[in-house]
Image (tube, rainbow, N blue to C red; front, side, top):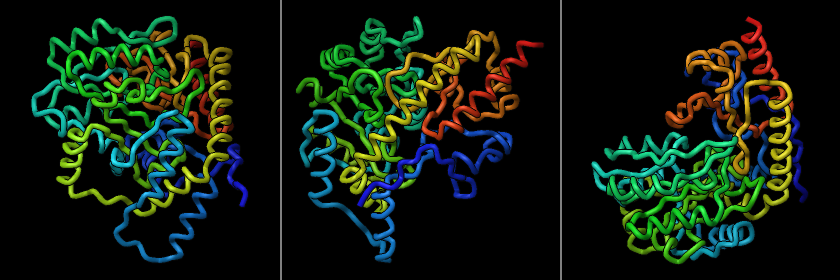
Length: 396
């Protein structure tokens, strides 16, 4: 059987499919005709191997309580070894219905109400949300933006760890939305600080399979000491466009940490995974390599296209240097607009739905996150709309 779904230029109408991305614009305060490049799912059909595995399971016709046995782990283990050089053990694996769900469990497992938890904004907005909605306080080690690239202020990081009595750090690796693929030496500086001050690390590595510059380093793999303090969050959902099937693979080598995490999972009474997610995940990791590599190259082309288009056609707008994830980070600060004016420009003048930078923290002001996992035609149309809207405000 050959892979059939390799036409990434194909535009597929997702409207009226209960798509959060396409069907809820008006409900979420957007114009009905807005072009959505916001939430991080792809506008590509999944691997045909995944489709066929799901069809076969549907034809069986029974959808009872389900779990996996050792074969599933072996497939996941093989993927992690081949793609990231990390060897995992079966007892480390805890399956959850999503990574944000796992972040919330970790917050409750490793901290108590009122504790301070460190994050690095601008960062994926649920990080702050799961901290605060569980009665903890988010402390921000703001990333430094200079010469179109982000870096970490390590002195500020350690100072806040000490001053705020931090016991848990949520790491975004690779970083969403700024697109950094952290170097091993950067991760080791963070890891050494965390080890010195007894800080546990939850590393969200959901975008690990989208690397365009450099190489992804699994935080826990860099030193045995890090493995002992880390919760590593992975999922096939971004890599294979399976977000709606709700499956994540969480790796915790430390037995005490794993026990505390699993206790919180038991308390949710939601510890059995969607059978279709399990079927899709297994098919993805077993047979999805050809689709994955073709998709990755297509997105690489989209990112290069977006960079060139912005540089040539939209003066006053810059794209932050991009190393990983399929989400690019556009800097509109050169236009001199207020946040309200920028939102009006994007949503009402350009009729494009992006994720505004302030969702990711105050340091995201003036930025917009753009999802490039779509047909080139869709991306070009969105950028063209932004270009034309910027030209109109400059002609005023």
